[in-house]
Amino acid sequence: MTSRGFEDLVVWQRAIELCDLVYMLTRSFPRDEAFGLTSQMRRASVSVACNIAEGRGRGTRSDFKRFVYMAKGSIFELRTLVRIAANQGYMAPDNTELDRLITECNRMIIGLIRSLESPAPKRPPS
Image (cartoon, rainbow, N blue to C red; front, side, top):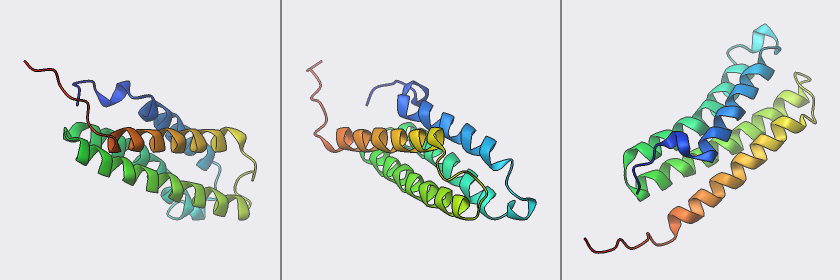
């Protein structure tokens, strides 16, 4: 793995955008959801970015891949929570920006997983 930091990863940058949007959207949720959907949606979105960063910081491909899989799980969790929030009338069912970011993050995560599952590039002899 290269020494490049997690902040350079476009997937991490999009995950931060997703997190910011989720925080903004959940500000309008009812107060009685503060410890329910609001908290759960925020934690799931934070988990996407944090798992990518933590996995990158672990230093091995296998650890990175494991954490990226956890980020993928958090994306699926967030998509489910968005559906529940829309069904409850807390947000519009067709929030295109949120759907776009969730879909984009998911696609990028899948691509990252695929790249981590392919054989590691051989290093030239020193």
